[in-house]
Image 1: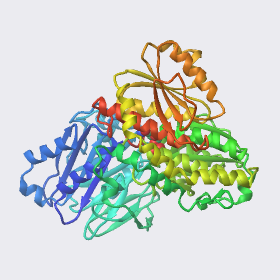
Image 2: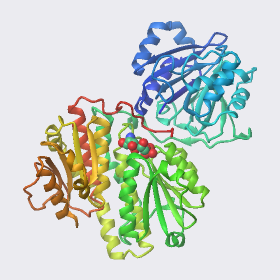
Image 3: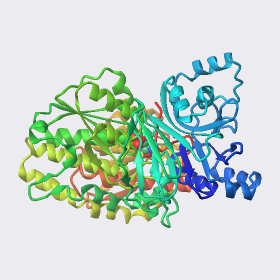
Image 4: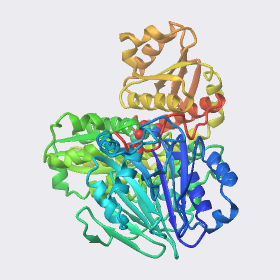
Length: 613
Ligand code: AGP
């Protein structure tokens, strides 16, 4: 999704804006732009298609050193195209008709066509295909010297999601920012204030931040912040400490953020478990769930909602809640949930799973579940994110910033916490002390189990070398390894652009096996489990049609005659094994993508956080 950075202070704004855009590149984008404000002078804007480096080059060529040094207020943007192709004309910032104000925007103005038609009827001549330009021009229509007022009047006519930063020639040293559905966070520095679409762009400047709420309009200067809520009431928003250092958003010597984040998982999963495992009582301690044992015991069903990788984590959770907590569990794609008039109520727990905490479909599902009176919890990574704040309670996975678009450590953190939740719920219901202790002990081993898989990086890279040329691949699993197969296929798809399908192993013979040609790689999750024999039978059916079988097997398991390649994961409980298995597939996808020369951290067409429907 789009990235926003704004600065008002005493330092030259240009390097700060460009540095902020570089921090936001991981979100995925296709063009970029910035605008500078100089006291008394016109607003100056530069935009370019492609990477931030091209914008920086354009700044160097077209902005004099003096202008770069004197302009201390500005806004900048990385655009992930929603309306209109990635062109310079569609890149932000966009201007009012008289060019006396400009803005950058993250989100979608859903009624922009009607607004545009009204403005064109009044003589406006649009210069782009974007919804954003309609908003800039609408604010310009209302502007009579009070920028916050004009922004409020224009936004009152807008339907959809927005995070915006606006500045005007006639109000030097002032930015007006507003959010509804797209995140915005203020950074409070010494004699300077910043605004960004996510905190990673602020870390280099300040640890003190304010997360705006939906409906907030903030007027910021170098030393002041005035926040009005949706009713135009002055509000004091909490100042939070980021608690993140630059190392958290740097590559740390790895070639890609994705590889760094894969290798962080012994630590990040350890963080997800830290202080939450009670191995003596065979349970988990999850204060954030905020529900009494009685409430939990009375739950009749749990509905897990999410998108993409988070949806796959939920599918593993479904097995865990049914197996450990005897709880009716079902997973729903978040976008589907909100439109199916969901059958949820006060005896249901809706668990919203999201790394970013900003995914529009998952946020909408949270709001719908609350409307229906369900108990709603968040399973989120980004503290201060909208889903974390709107669910009001839940469990953070503490994975640290996940910069690579492809989610890795968030997935394993989500699964680890889901297993903790299932253990906690189970022990409040029918799960025995003995079984609880066994599972708690297995969970406590996870950092060590993960380290064993990471140690096989070179062996997995060699397996990747033998499948990197394939244009199609299948991932097969049963039980809780079925969602791991789906996740493995998604990883390969999104970073190597290989067409990969995840299937329940039994499903292949019901059609997809027709696609097999000699040499097609079929990755099979053949870890020790009750259905292992059936998994091998399914693998045999594929092998008989010429497929290359790449088997993820449990250390010490009986040698098989089927697999062409093997990736070994440590012996552990089948539910817990989903995490080491997923990490093996993350490494497999990473090395295939590396061998295919793909960009990996910022795959084409993808965004890190999908804040539009
Ligand atoms: C994962 O590799 C993808 N980048 C994507 O599917 C992601 O999981 C999905 O967009 C959900 O994001 P969230 O967890 O931030 O809600």
